[in-house]
Image (cartoon, rainbow, N blue to C red):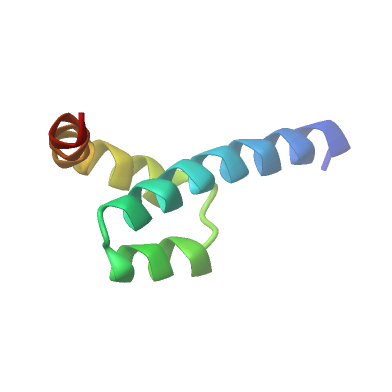
Length: 65
């Protein structure tokens, strides 16, 4: 595998994982947090989690302001 491709995949996965873990922590979803922390599937579960929790996270942020 090309080292540049591998670097791009790692950066892609790291960015989505960080965003999803942040959101899981803010929403206090411990089960999701542990799942996302353990499994590395190139960002696919992270993207799904972010999409599914988008409305709930928006409501949380609107209540804080």
